[in-house]
Image (cartoon, one colour):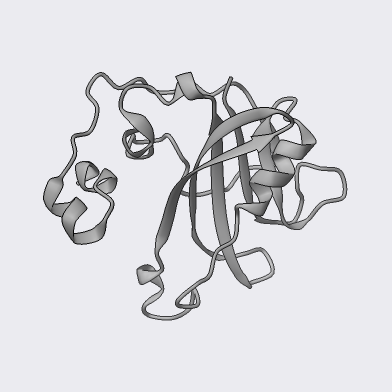
Length: 162
């Protein structure tokens, strides 16, 4: 079953006494070791500060990594991006991770899932809370291989999303 975690800077985190960069939402009953591993994937380097005229050019980082925690394997689909200024007026980021098992990836695969509207959030303005089970979209058509993109970059996977 999928597990998800949202990490950003907030005056109050999900864990008692947490604040600043911390988990603000996670799946109900998430294992601590999985939560720690997902938090460790939340790094972000801003190219431009939020007050810079070019702040809108800060990249959105999407990824799919395979991890093993507590004897279980997960495919972690993530979105990590600039989130403007935090509650202290310092640089902020927003990371959303969804950990899936093999059968939850579905026919469309990770690139297809990452491209689905609403699968990963793009902003956070809520109080910390536990998340109920996420419904994973199911794709009926896998992305195709783009031979030209493969030849030019070595990775044809993301070309299919274009």
